[in-house]
Amino acid sequence: MLQSHGREVRYMDRVIVKCNSGFGPIEQILECKLNGVLEVMEGGGRLAPCGPIECGELYTPNSQILSLRNPNEFYIECNPGFVIFPFDASPEVQCTSNGTYSTVPQCLDYNECEEVISSPAKQAVWL
Image (cartoon, rainbow, N blue to C red; front, side, top):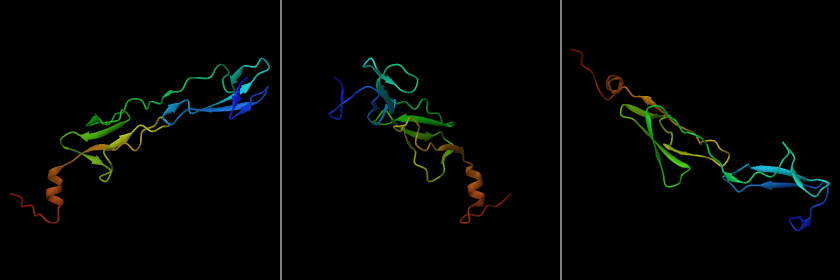
């Protein structure tokens, strides 16, 4: 006899199975069939095992991606001559529990000469 939250599961009853955070599939709905077997409502078949959710390859041009302590946390380090954008963005990126990355900053080309010329605290003298 199958029980869900202390209640017996009977013919035509539906049970929601949820994986822990960071594992998927996130939710599956099962229905008890006439033969006593629980079948997945969408797509039929058997219950899929919970496995780690992966975000796929993280790619940001003009940067190096460093792995942090946790395998789901990364640090974006821009190559020389490039700066992180938006300028107030965090260089840390996380693979979230729904399989997407948190905000991924970009590394943009930084023209040091332009800053010297346009800076109000500096004056450029053209020769």
